[in-house]
Amino acid sequence: MTGLDKQGAMILDEVGLPDGFEFNGIHCGIKSSPAKDLSLVKTEDNKPVLTAAVFTTNEICAAPVVVSKESLSASGGLISAVLLNSGNANAATGAKGIKTVRDSAIKLAEVMGCDTSNILVCSTGLIGIPLDPKPILDSIVTLEQESQNSIEAFKEAAEAILTTDTVAKTFSVQPQSKAYKIAGFAKGAAMLAPAMATMLTVVVTDADIKLDHLRSSLNDAVEDSFNSILVDGCMSTNDTVIIMTSGKYPVKDLDEFSTLLKRGLQSLAYQMVKDAEGGTVVAHLTIEGAVDSYQAKALARKVAQSVLVRCSLNGRDPYWGRIISELGAAGVNIDPGKVQISYGDYLVADGGVAAAHDIKGLAEYMQNDEIAIGVNLNLGASVHSMIFCDISHGYIDENRKTS
Image (cartoon, rainbow, N blue to C red; front, top):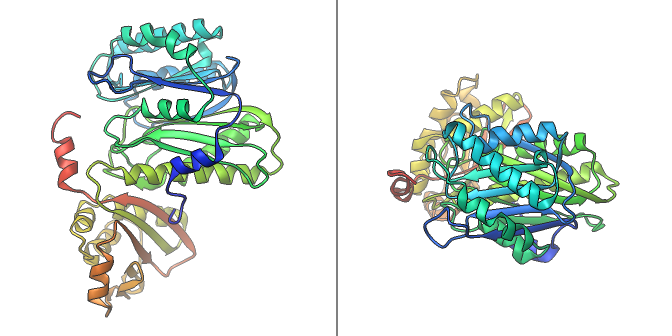
């Protein structure tokens, strides 16, 4: 994923938003601070549109995930709105948590004049703490009535789902023909593991895409974006990625649509690692020369989740010994005598042993905020890339207490 458009917000301002949707983000009182904590993405005419989603694979699913799965199935993939809150995950909250989600969906459906099954709900924040529904229910009318199709409203919706994030993550892309647009926003700065989405993301498009293709495109895009990043290897209970399409404009090239969606989600994924809790360096890891994709992915994940490797990054230390050690512990067959490891353009290991290199030049390279790590197994043609970050004192300070 190296070389992506790294300024998603700038792309948003240049490309604009798809037709057929409205957005809003407000403070309703879930957070004790005045920060925004309630967000809405809805169709302009309140009618349901084709929608696909991917949810967490964590067996402890938050109440909004449970209910949203049910709604998406009951509606046949037809959704009018997504209601999101930050400040409380509504996870591990039992029957009361489920009721809070249902009551919120019922209230928004009444305001919009649609069926309850046409509403999806997402939450993010602290786990195991009951979510008071009153601030949400008291704010839904205002939230819906003041929604707009504007970049400002879109940014406010993105801002309202942030927790420990320092910035909102957004993107907007379109084909060269400018026939349609795809835009989205996300939150995520920790509890990011390469196993599903690991955050909240809402994407909208005005492309006329059938539901089956929408689903397959989303699944493929998630695999090469949110499934290919790592901050701490911890999986959330609330992970959700949603894409809605107003279907206003025809699509001549379905592969182009899929490519653009993947590009957008990769931009969001990069922005999340860039904003990781306590992160000081972003590492772009590429495993190449693997026998197959399974081997490449297994090795990439093993290296990226290594505490020792990430500590080395924090110290700007190109200690490749930690990398080759993790390669050997991944549980897939490799030939140590063929392994090459590099940092940027500096080859530090060749044939599984140290390679002569410019030590001073490498030391200077390691001071960069972004570092490329390359591993060539020289066994086959498969390649897999991951983006991850270092572990710092800042991450520990953020997470040594409830946050």
